[in-house]
Length: 135
Image 1 (tube, rainbow, N blue to C red):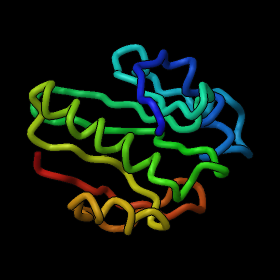
Image 2 (image 1 turned 90 degrees about the vertical axis):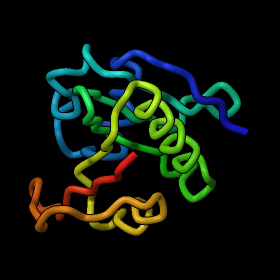
Image 3 (image 1 turned 30 degrees about the horizontal axis):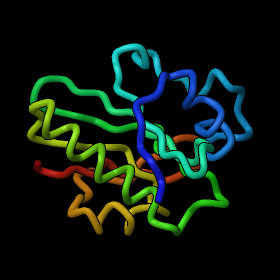
């Protein structure tokens, strides 16, 4: 069973880079406000296999840079991690949680009750939409 722990922003960078934007420089996966965020990692047998970053601004919380190592996808680890972040956002007083979701992951977010609340937009060639959940 994976264990979820708080981690530093720096601990997220390698997975963010490898999974989300491997063709970009490492700095591309850093978020300007990483120091203000809450970062969580899922560990399997001591190895960091999934990361997510949560940013809370009053009643609104946003998660970013959600990445699971390809060898550990479709095993429920991302589900555990996102459920943890939903609970953390609620604990921190947020009433809405949102993300910019890659459309190829939209069905995953819908399973949590998240809904698309924007038109499609692109980051490079990758289509996204804003997804939101009332907490």
